[in-house]
Amino acid sequence: MNDMKVRVNAQSESATKTVIKARKFQFVVDEPAELGGTNEGPNPVEYILGAFAGCLSVMAHLIAKEMNIELRSLKLDISGLLNPARLFGKSFDERAGFKEISVVIKADTDADEATLQKWIEAIEDRCPVSDNLQHVTPVNIALKTVGR
Amino acid sequence: MNDMKVRVNAQSESATKTVIKARKFQFVVDEPAELGGTNEGPNPVEYILGAFAGCLSVMAHLIAKEMNIELRSLKLDISGLLNPARLFGKSFDERAGFKEISVVIKADTDADEATLQKWIEAIEDRCPVSDNLQHVTPVNIALKTVGR
Image (tube, rainbow over all chains, first blue to last red; front, side):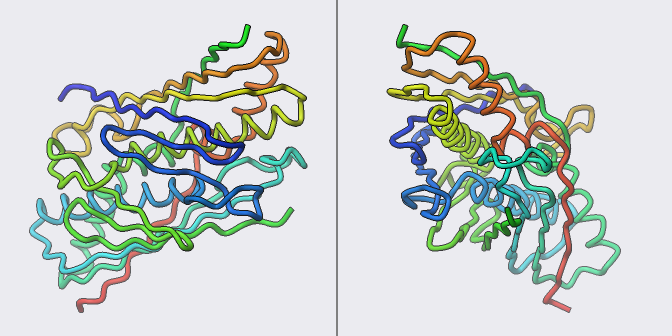
């Protein structure tokens, strides 16, 4: 299969609020008041966990179909532990992002344990967001200034 | 500073559509028709790039303030290259997620090159999403079945 290029464009509307455009869609990223924001939308790390939930759900259904698992309903609870000290420049002892992420997948299904174990392993292996969180991804950041 | 626990709850509404709740907010994750979805919202990897843009923007403003950089406007273009073969189970030669992510930060500022170089380095180092994409994060996935 060919590589896909996924793109978004973002415009800062304030120190904490950003409007994202992805194809025909638009969504707002902000920070809650306790992190200095105007609370007009979920914050970046909540979108990360939401994207992870959405990706796991797509994979769960796709792989259930492949394995003939009947999946009557699916819910996911995801949480992550983060210390904001580095973000605020108070300390550089800990990493900036999530230290760990916990996922609970609640599935209504009659499939047996061994089948479900294979299902979960395939979901985790084939989910793009799971891969990008659990492994290193090269990021290149370029700056273009328009003031000077 | 104390650790923060960030949480989301997700409900699958179809094989590709997931509704995410984060505090008082709700957002929809879906897939476009060409990836088998109903296209009712951005897809998971678009949310990942949007979250990255939002996080970089928050850090850009916070660190500009610390460094006395006047930032008149900020836009970001982010793209990522992904091969869907593993997602669809067609081939396991390549990773599931983004192979690389490219960020262009467009800043309207008069600050000098050396100052802006330090600014960009601090943004990248202190941005939680940048950390989680560029480094390994432990993920634990637990399954709870309700059918049996």
